[in-house]
Image (tube, rainbow, N blue to C red; front, side):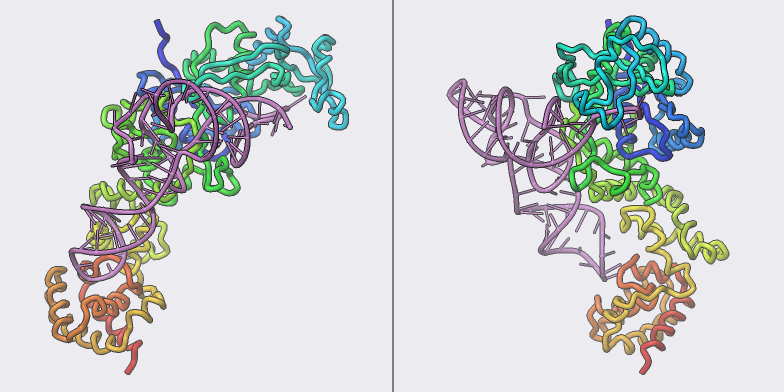
Length: 471
RNA sequence: GCCCCCAUCGUCCAGCGGCCUAGGACGCCUGCCUUUCACGCAGGUAACACGGGUUCGAAUCCCGUUGGGGGUGCCA
């Protein structure tokens, strides 16, 4: 018989949710849901300075944004101090740990470069100024385990130092807290980053010394790396999950993409509108054993593609709703909100921008000309569009447009007929009008834009541009 | 230095001894569509790091080399 599957995500509150942590959370969640187990949270807030409630809230916010729901009440490691201390005491009592005096930097060479004196093992020092408790690592033998992702991994004990389990200030270290809490939470699968592979032997040694029955399964996920193939770093890379939200990425696209770093759906269908769906999403096929063992490059280009796919799949209403926060952040939003007709105009043009953006933050830039008093003229576009014939063309368009029925298909037809009549190239003919109205050479379809702006405004801008050309 | 991990197109994922003249996706390039830009559609480009084994047969197994990464804290 096997015990019910229980996995955990154990972040420490650092003030933001790291992309790598987010992926660790996601893979734990997927594994739990795939196996029908529980996905638990443990906040590793032993570092007192960082255990502020608002910093912990940041973690919950990130998980909620992604849609990763957790089971049971999260455990706060800071509440578990008594248990950690008891574990240290028990190791001390059983002879598995000992008090160790610090070795000054200058003296380390006398102890094989170590920051401690192995002879302390037999000194039976007891508590004292500056003394920490270290675990007595066996001198011979090796510890090994069969990693779900990597197969057998083995480390000789002679290569493991006597690590600290209780600092001189009395606080327990990560090692002892981690082992004690995993046992307490009855964790069956430890799924974490590859950077923690080398602490696993210590974990196992501690667990055994504490007399905890059995051991969990381990799965060490490959790291997410940058272009230089290095672990994502706070300094050089965009590692804050929520920054991606601010940059206009959808959470479902984020989840979709993150799932494919180190893993791929067995049916080959990469774009999943509901990646977390228990029946249509990734959970049914997510086997932790299938996760790749080599590092994966975080490729924003592919993320953009995935995000674009998700954006285009949204209903117009949904796309509009999701765009609003970005519209509200635009510097012309004041003008927008002062205009009662603005929402309707935005709604009319939004479907045209939906196929043109890859992130929501690009939306305002596509529709700004409609809501600004004057379009922001891009000089390059202007120079390219305002060819020799431009002034004459604009005169004709201004004259004709005053009579045209104000509907996109009609405008299209009349406009092209006019181009034909003047013997102008279709592409070149629309350019001056586009630049006059929008300020740029690229943007939403011209005629739809004209309808949204209204005839008066269109004529006003055309005349203004025409005047600018002089002659 | 020492320990551990990794190694298929530029990138992500397939491949788990014969189905591989290596497949899909992103990117890039070309064409079609077209009022711009996109979307869409149709093509193209591009990889088993190297050397030894094992085997009738290896991208797939083993060993080594090289290269990359992670860890070496009284951080987690």
